[in-house]
Image (cartoon, rainbow, N blue to C red; front, side, top):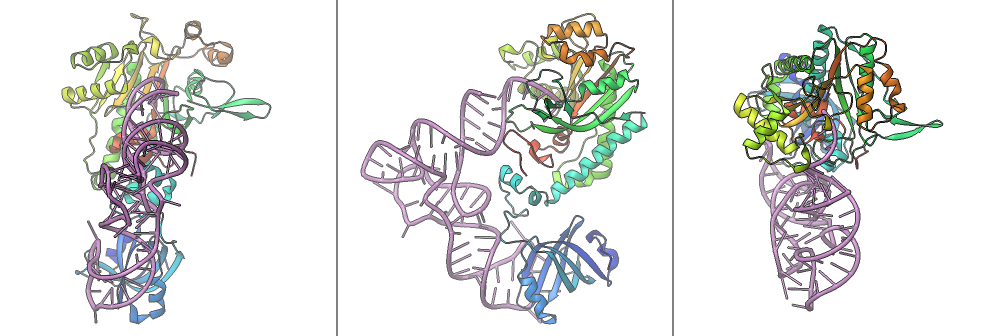
Length: 439
RNA sequence: GGGGGCGUGGUGUAGCGGCUAACAUGCGGCCCUGUCAAGGCCGAGAUCGCGGGUUCGAACCCCGUCGCUCCCGCCA
């Protein structure tokens, strides 16, 4: 018999159906058993009058919570039942996979175990409907990203994650044995997406894994995460990149609200706001002044940079002044940006760069890139880099590379911000950190 | 790498110098013709992360250690 989803039962009153799912609760009384079954679409009560089939009743009595079962029975409209006034009268039951008892933890208990323990048993944790909803939403987010890009003539690339030389600083790279030599896991597709500009692809994106060997112990860092990268050609400044990003994000938010607005209210408890464009833009110099005027003291060694507390303070300012959740911080000092960021013409101490802060969290870094090879090489040397290992990269700009720029965004950080989660471990399928390699 | 916090039955917590360690939930058993966050009764389950010290006495105070967590640094 074909399986019926629980959400579709209302249309099958008085018919015999098969449903498959997990036994969420068993209320075993003297004469009657009530089984609450869950599939990804909802919950339903199954009733079994024990004298009808004593051996079946016995089998059900031994079932542990969260067992995977299939049930055949008649759908009854029953106003007495609180759960959707619907009930299935049990005819037969197949135990597809019995759950051992006790469970490592009950995903439906009022209080949940600590995040670390839930990660040990992540597949149980993921059975919580809020998590199913989260990954449905993430699927829509990625679909909306691609919809926007393909409508706007972007090409999708997949750059290698095994690389032969450190691309930027080198300190944050994982290294591994690669036959007779050393290889590294890519810490960003930066150079390869710029190569696509030299290849004449004009507009590209990539969604793929990124590795960072930073021993970071925070609620927003991972050693492996999904990077969302984009790069476009023939731009005049970093403002062109910001324009694309804000329109793209607005599109993503509006699609998510369209498809999941109700779900977000139900599971996350708030109404999703689609951001207006343009997003506020604040040059870093001005941002530092704003912080000063609000009495926020930056650490002394910051020289034009802003610490996470400062970013949250700026976000609060933007929320008050513009009622906006997003803000571009622009024109960062050369000292805190990589060598390939293009500098401002009228002030060579600043770069054509930006960060996007969303609800106080940094989710993006972007810039116009320096595409003139002589200046690029000079800037690399200034930053203390040896030209040897990056010669292949410098070569990209020798034979007609258009002016270009782009940004990188952390997918899980976006999910964190969008769904108001306090820890990135809640926003990712499986977390990888300095002390977490399993499951 | 630096700093703060926490570590008590399976899970979540209370206890913070005199405990035979409490509560909730879960688990096992019995009872209950219809429950629905089911209910009632009974029961099992913790040498209070580990090591050392102070004390007549330590889950509780001190030191060390390990683990987790958050913040800073770094970033997405």
